[in-house]
Length: 345
Image 1 (cartoon, rainbow, N blue to C red):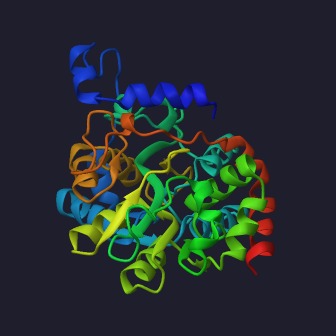
Image 2: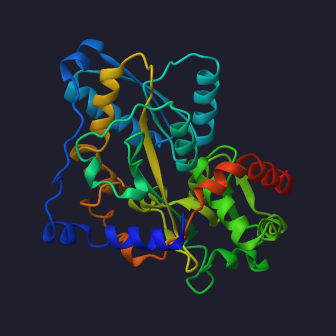
């Protein structure tokens, strides 16, 4: 994705409520695709594969069940693990899932090209920025994932904290850092693919020399900082830091001067899924008011432009965002994972 396009989406998202209220009414000229709620209730169940953080995923499932009476069967894991299970089932000719939510826009675009998703434009589709959805409705962002750096404020002074991604190669951080594995979490794949392209693999070789610990996912990064086993997250998901601060932990989010990552988490309805109407009802619910207002309350950035950022967090427009070339990452996924594993084995 070009820097120009990311600049454009920042302007779209900046002061979203003011801009949108002042301009043409949302939904003007947009007619959402219908959802047969009665048929969805008769189906009584929806199977959801997702990499949404576990507490948020469980909350969404519970809210949907309370509102509709439709049961949500949830499989939750890291983005790469979810995609691996999904593609293995699809390639075997077995469609066991109704709705897929990952944090890998590159994979979603590729799967859409393969014709695996149902084109569907639910209510509020028009409130998702273009960069967060397929124009034909094959997928739409559930939320935006803000990826930055964290530090223990009680262990690292403000003057000692890194300011940019490139600062992490400084020898003074040796033995202090932790980050997740791109073979497990698709979000880290976006970061590694982008930073290795921008700064070369020498950047990660220096992080290896600095004894950077590799853990499975973002939850484990958060746990390491809370326990004090490491004091700097060399890449972390901002929503975890938000939760940790609310719980009283001295953890600061550092939005890198060379660019914070804002990666959308696409949701798609699966073609041939066992509960097609419940799938559409659930996908529509995902970008409805109840879920979209839940995300900022729980420290996530919502996908819709008419929602505020999490309390105390900067507006998206105030941050320099790192452009991500999703086509490049989709083409180079295997090579990126293999090279990373070679360095950190």
